[in-house]
Amino acid sequence: MKNHNLCLAQLLEKEKTEEAKSYLEQWNTGIEEGEAVIYTGSVFADAMLNPKYLQAKRLGIDITVQMRVPGEDRIAPVDLCCLLANALDNAIEACRRGSAAGYPAGWIRMKSQIYPNYWVFEIANSTYISVKQHEGRFLSSKQVPMSGVGLQNIRTVVERYEGVLDLKSGTCFTLNAMFPLP
Image (cartoon, rainbow, N blue to C red):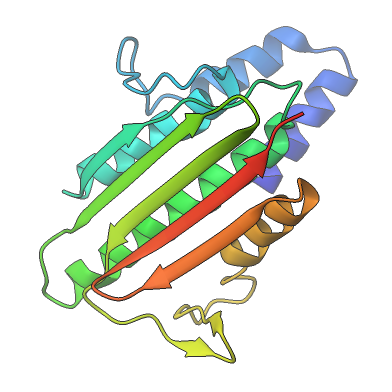
């Protein structure tokens, strides 16, 4: 992602907007015209969630997404996408680990609701392999450098907006976040 962003930034800095558009079109070839199935009320969230939704479907994961998200005036698109992308990436990864261990592909349930003074976001996924914890913090099972930072990124976003984060692990993993809205 960083390399794609660097490339796009350079094209835009040099005012090569047509080349940037072309690059984006090539980058997003995974989503065919009309394949978008998620409409959250935010073009940023939709653009990020739809490819991940399709990825989960291709992996055989039973996924449902029912979401409304706050507008840009309430939560910055970069923070919204950070929260949603990290949460969904973690859920997909958990389902993939289960599949690799011989279990069914698993499931993911993602939902959110906007209330007058707050926004509630929840994502739950099947966990066939227990999530390890140390001193009350969930540990990454990945052995790759710079991995396992998804929950920390989520925590950072929740703290930035003075929200509340609740994580539960058992027969499934559930992440709940509540954000006060201005």
